[in-house]
Each structure stands twice: as structure tokens, then as C-alpha cells.
Length: 415
Image (cartoon, rainbow, N blue to C red; front, side, top):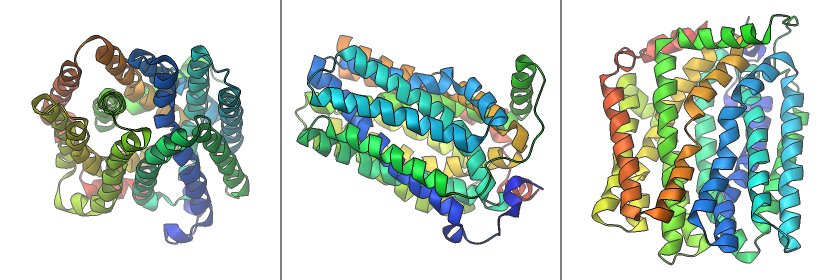
């Protein structure tokens, strides 16, 4: 029996531990989203350099790829709840220290990079263990709905977080970082209040480290649909973070305030939220292949900026992608979590994260460097061409063409 099967199949909104998990992450993610705007605004205020803002974004996202495999091993070997609590504690100390340094007017650029990197390390360990926590508190048949709810929650905080971060930064540079530190404290309290164990009972794995890693890699690699999805949508992570940083930098250069820049980024979150409500309808109307390919082609909307180089046009051009993302996530994430054995979940998820997120830190880094050295049009053109390559690949891919039908996904979830 899977770990989630012992949970009574009540609606998710009446599942106590699921609601605690979501509430804690709602607050934590809101703080994280507020600092996603505050970091580049702080660097631009301190240094005036778009390239340095890109370096900070790179440092914050790099650990997701670098530490994914160690995090997966840790999640499958140690208590997942305590691993998540430790990750939250480290982030409270790092972000709180940065806020204190800002208040004391003693925040060198290297300290911003270091804190962003430490926060990213904490997020890497927390997110891999979180997958096991979600599976533990949700019956397996409800995992696609839980994945959809998770995307909706992320959309809500992406809607509220950036304008909140921009507004707080306008009041005081340290304020969004203080709010982020407090949000991690709320996440810690929600985890402590949960009763369900975050993993099945398991015997200690005495095999070699290399063998344990290879087992998780083999499982994912033998699933053509999951393998191709990880590659395609992982590479698309180069586009998203890069374009969002471009919105911040270009918006600032075009005279927008921190709050206005935050509102533009929040529009992406608003469309993610709308997309989460549209997701069940799209899954009924479209085959899985069409859902996946649709997201890939929508990235080309950023090319509108080449015709009309306004930050408002750039922000509007990526909104269709936000509408499509929740449908893709609910299918791919729900299916992957459901069919992966609990004892392999951390390692398989970490392998997937390594594949899908390895290029993600390069997106904001490339955007920052390009915006510093070439025109904004040339920068956005690079991202548009990259999106076109992925869209053509996804359209022609045999694995995506043979994507499982929704009834097959439901059958897999029910096992």
C-alpha cells in the first residue's frame, strides 16, 4: 500500500495535513516571490549593474541543479520532515542576516550573492523532500488535483508577491527580506503541526552511493515520456527566469517604479492563477500532447517586443505561457509522483530536477549580461529563437506524440 493510501479520501480542502502543508508554503512562497523582485532592485540600487543583478539571480537558482542529487539522496535516507525544517531554519538565518546588514547600511555586493546562494541551497533540499511530503498526505488518486492546487497556490503568490516585494522595497530596502524571513518561520510551524509521517517505513540502504544514484536515474530514464518532458520543460526554464529578469531591468530603464515593475511580473502570476482554473477544462478538451506542445509554442509571444520594444508589450507577450503552464504541470507532475515508488521518490525527483534545472540559472545570467552588452531587442531575440527550437522539438518528438492519455494517467495514479 502506498503511503498516501492510508489518508481518508476526503476532499483536499478537508485534508488537515494537506491544508497545513499548503498554508505554510503559501506564506513561504509569498515571501520568496517578494524577494525575487527585491534582489534585483537591491543590486540595481547598490551597483546600478544589470549584469550583477543577473549574477545574483544565477546564484539563487544554481543550487537547484547543483544540489539536486545530494538532496534526493538525503530525502530518501533521512527523515524528510526534519530535512525540511533544517532547510527552513538555514534560510531564516541567511535572509534575516541580509536584512540586518541592509538596516546597518553595511551590505557589500558579495554578501547579496552569498545569501541568494544559501537561500537556493535551502530551497533545493526542501523542494525534493516536499514531493515526498505531498505524496504522504494525499491519496494517490488525488495527486493530479493536488498538483493542480499546488500550481494554483504558486500562481497566487506569484500574483501577490512581486508587487508586494516592490512596494515593501519602496518603503524600506530591508523590509521584503524581513518578510521573507518571517514567512519561513510560518512554514516551520506548519510542518511541526502535521501528523502524517513523510515517508514509508524503510530499511537502511547500505548500497554504494553511486548505486543508489544510478537506481533513481535508471527509473526516470526508462520512462520515455518523463525523460523527454524533463528535458523539454527543463530547457524552457532558461526562457522563463531570463525573460522575467528582463522585464525587471527593462522596466527599470524605462522609468517604472519598483511597485510598477512588481505589478508587471505579478501579471504573469495572475495568468498562472487563471490557468489553474482553466486547467481541468483544457485537459478535457485537448489531448495530453496538445497541452504540452501548446505551452512550448506560447513562449514565442516574447517576439512581439522585437516589433514594439516596450516593457508592457514584453510582459503581455509571455502571459499566454502562464495560462498554459498549470495544465502541463498537473499532467506531468501528477503522473510522475504517482508512478514513482516511495523509496525512490527523492532520487528520481532529484535526477529530474538536475536534468530540468541545470540550464535554468543560465537564463537570468544570460539576460543580465546581454542587457548590459547588447540591445534589449537582441536579448529578447535570443530567447525567442531558443523558444522556437524547443517548440519544434516538442512538436516532432515521438515521446510527446505518444504521451499517455488522461485515462492512462488516472489508471497509473490508481495503482
